[in-house]
Each structure stands twice: as C-alpha cells, then as structure tokens.
Length: 205
Image (cartoon, rainbow, N blue to C red):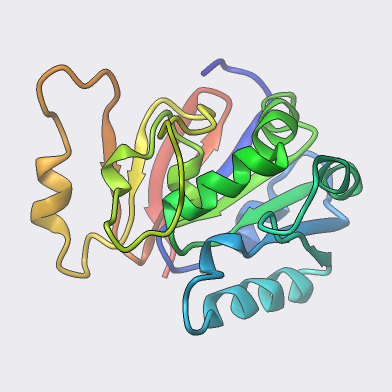
C-alpha cells in the first residue's frame, strides 16, 4: 500500500458517511458501477437496492455488473465508464470466486491504485479490498476457490458486523501466530476511509 491517489470507503452496513466521502473525491464522479454478486446466493438483498438508491440520490448514474455472469471484456467496458465501483456484501468467497473468474481483480485493482476508480466495499466487499479473505470462511459459502488472496488495496482485513454477536470471533482473528496481516473489526455504524496509505475509522450510521 503506497501513499498514492487511491480512495476507498470500507463499511459494515451503515452508509451515513458515504455522501460526504463522495463529495470529498478529487473529481466529482458521474457514474458508479454496482457489483451485487456476493448477494446472489441470498434469498433477498435489500442492501443492494439501498446502495443503488443512495448513489442515485447523490446524482450518480448507476449501472449494475453481476460478476457471476460477466466476461472480462464486459467488466473492462463497465469499469472504463465509471468513476466509482461499489462492491456489495454477501458471501465473501462466492464473491472472490467470480472476481477471479471475470477478471475483475486484474482490471479494478490497478484502476483503484491509480486513482481512476474510487472503491466502495461493504461487508464482504470491504474484506475483498484487503490482502486475504481467509477469516471470512463460511461452510455455507458456495464459492469455489483455491486461494483466499484478496485485492491487496489495503494491508488489513476488514471484519464487519462486530456488533452482531461477532466480537469474540473477530478478536480470535486479530493476532494469531504467524499471520502476516492484521484485521480491523468494525460495527455496522462504522466505516474505514482510505486516502493513499492513510486510513481512519469513522462513524457511518
């Protein structure tokens, strides 16, 4: 992680701080691409619709890109038209499976690092930005992967929903022997904002 132009918003559930973060971007974004893929195995995904509504309320045109069905050329086209990518929550390893299959990792990560694409990740989407998704392993997750390596945009793994009875689990993941990367545990009313190599946890109810 370098002190470059990248901008990230990594949340758990609450989007209260997102409008101010969007307004703080160096250039006013016109279009966002929303990645709903992690939520595909869920029976319903109201958080995806809420995300789309908030982005539109902030004046952005919003396109949806489902990585489960996307080919690399389609991912490249959609990302090339957007200034913001929003990766919604759900099953983390299912998301990672299709991030790799679709080429999203190879296309999005360099664009975020270069500042061409601002990154919003919520829950699984926040964890995807980190170095590894191993702490998010869930036996019910239908993702088929051989490696849990993430996008590596930040040097820590975001563990979301601490306030939903997950504090003890998060603390067990905090510093196991031999693990090369730290974790950051956040509640649903918090988010991590990143500018280059600098980051902070802030309220986001």
